[in-house]
Length: 77
Image 1: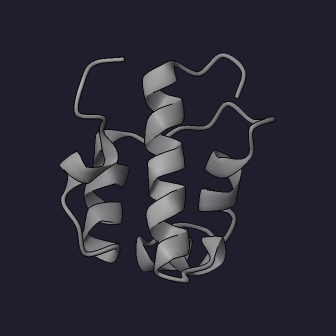
Image 2: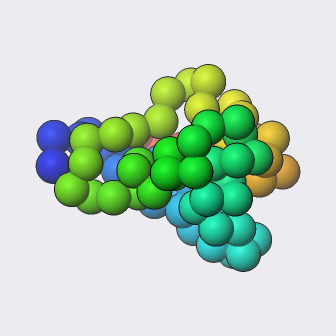
């Protein structure tokens, strides 16, 4: 993931792990949070520079039944 901070990389990977643990496809999660079917795929694609914002993380937490803080590391990176 080029030109994306270590924190953004961590958050993207954490969302991906939680999504996969719940057997939710990228397309389905995109739909659950009200975005186009390719939204999550674009963010998880390391060739693109897309990333989540706070609004996205709140919607993702609702969809994945967790807290937004679950996407962040315990210690600063």
